[in-house]
Image (cartoon, rainbow, N blue to C red; front, side, top):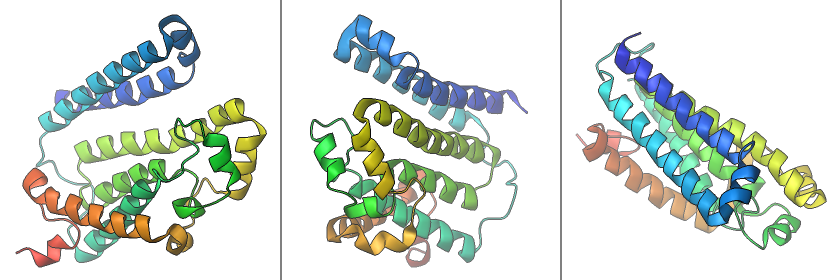
Amino acid sequence: MDDALVSLVAASVTFVGSHFVLSHPLRTGLHNVFGARGFQLIYSLVALASFGWMVAAFRAVPAAAAPLWDGTGNGHWGFASLLTLIASVLLVGSFQGNPALPDPRARALAAKGPHGVFHVTRHPMMWSFALWAVAHAIVASTPRVLVLAGALGFLALVGAHLQDRKKEALMGADWQRWEAVTSYWPRFERLRQSGPIPLGAGLVLWLAATWGHIPLAYVPAGVWRWLVA
């Protein structure tokens, strides 16, 4: 393993580890010492610094490294495109009545029962990141992509599990009832129950993001792979 890839692994471990440590074992102590705003500032600075290191380390790893498998076929790209479209719908829908987000209405939102993308999973934002990571690993299985995607996917899915534990402690029976009527694992067959706003806005986000893939990554993604010569 060359030095650039080692640096990427170290940056990824720091990014993921700092999120877990600050979100759970150190959260209460730092919150008590620095207050809510102070804690948020510390959390944001650490997250930005470690993410910046991870991005810089990713760029330093040669992009031409041999992939572990050939993901250039239409089948790979078609499946990855579908995953990112679903991820876009889940991400957009995660901002509509999400009891997991900091909101004084969290208990009331949880009491509503499944609504929107929460018919699919109670962690739509986390699963959107995980699906994004899987999609990129499918079509670009180079060491640097697998490390970055693996770190983000791990952070999202383990973070979702830990979020459940934290919310159980904060909201007690209200969150337990929410868990009882929703699913950690996505039930993709229920996407049609997401509603017109997540489905429509998710499609728009997906089209824009995959179009942006052309100038940013120099590779057409999504439907543009077949429409742009």
